[in-house]
Image 1 (cartoon, rainbow, N blue to C red):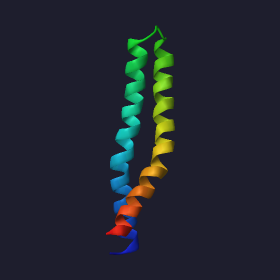
Image 2 (image 1 turned 180 degrees about the vertical axis):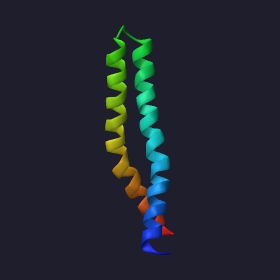
Image 3 (image 1 turned 90 degrees about the vertical axis):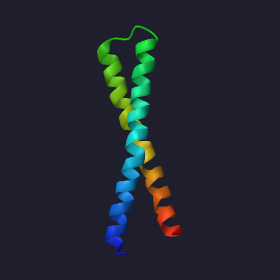
Length: 74
């Protein structure tokens, strides 16, 4: 398989993994802040975006490297 095609498939498969992780972390944060405490709406929304962005930054390189290792082992 051509190198560019492999990179494209790795990127697509990785995105299907790290995007739900980030969205899930953000939604979990929103749920926890809605159920506990009386935080203002803007603080909850801002925190949700912040948690989603940070979890995306952290999970993206980890997931991509693991997916690449799976492709190399095939």
